[in-house]
Length: 295
Ligand SMILES: C[S@@+](CC[C@H](N)C(=O)[O-])C[C@H]1O[C@@H](n2cnc3c(N)ncnc32)[C@H](O)[C@@H]1O
Image (cartoon, rainbow, N blue to C red; front, side):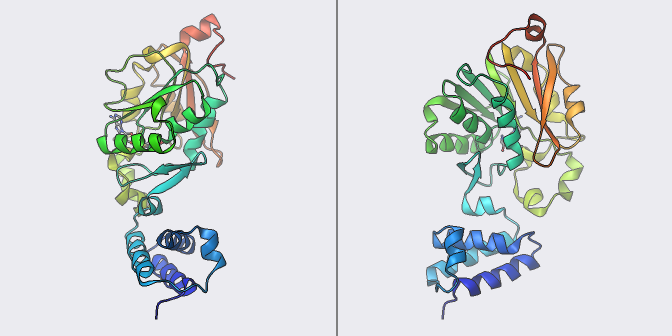
């Protein structure tokens, strides 16, 4: 006889707990909801419901994947970011709530009707760019990723969110070959020091794309590639917001060229400085008002 939701959940939570999953019951609820095609509230509200053969098999496959520490977002194929649903695959970083700090850092500093061109370096799922385009009605965006598979996922997300007409995704090496000016540049580059990757939880270390994590020997390699030349891409009144890892803000700001000036940075919900904000030095000297009003 096939198990009820309650029984299947109990067994799965034990299996996931034994595999070292941090919150086994919550993950089991999400996965069973995916297998049944219902949301978590239905799972919680109907523990007595019997599962079909097909549902049992689908759930077992998901639990086996989670036991190998494949992220839930990859198993179910999506993750919410900025209250939007993004397709996620093994080729993309799972969007993190902390990265919403980058989006709000931009929105807090611009006149939303004046932003016309946005650039997202290392776009992954496209979450930063597409969240911004949702909020900036006149803007067109370019997302760059070195991974063709990631760029394809970002393009699919743009279509799914009805933003394909305002976004273009290209495969490339940061901003090489791109011409400005952009009113806003955002980037969440890989910033984990190579030796530290093995110490991350297995979900990340084993299953998120290495190219999305590895920041080289000191974690700052991508910033060394991005920051020189970033100033030439910005409009005179533009701004750049870069996500940074724990304790990296000063070191990253020090890599900015002489044409850029650090004007701020925002903390995430945990109180950690999560991003830095840079503006062209010339605009500060001239006191340009405009697209990006710094405060
Ligand atoms: C930390 S992930 C960020 C993804 C997404 N922006 C987000 O916030 O979830 C970094 C991204 O940079 C991309 N990347 C790594 N090296 C790159 C390079 N040289 N040029 C462009 N993109 C690169 C990776 O493929 C990955 O998608």
